[in-house]
Image (cartoon, rainbow, N blue to C red):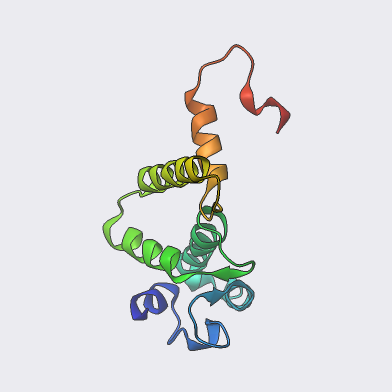
Length: 134
C-alpha cells in the first residue's frame, strides 16, 4: 500500500482507508484529495492517477458503494509499474463468473458486466447498431 500512496502523492493511506481498516479506500476522501490537488498545477499526474484509481475501483471492479477495495487498488499499482493493460484478464474473469452464476443458478456478479457488454457489442457485427438505445 506504500506504493499506492507514493503514486497518489500522499504520505500515507491511513486517513483514506475505511474506518475499521478492514480494507478498501473511501472514495469520498480521495475525492476531497482530488479537489485539493486541483489548486496545485504541479500535481497534474497525481490528479490523473487518482481519477484512474477511481475508474479501476468504482467502475471496473465495484464492491461496496463508495469504497474502492484493495484488489483493484493493487491492480492499479501493477498497471502503473508494468504498463500492461489488464482488460483481457478482467473480461475473461467476468465471463467465467457469469458462466458460473448461470450454471449454478446462484451467486452474484461482483465484476464488470458493463465492460463485458461494451466489449461484446463492439466485436459483434450487426446491421443495426447495438448501442443505439444507450
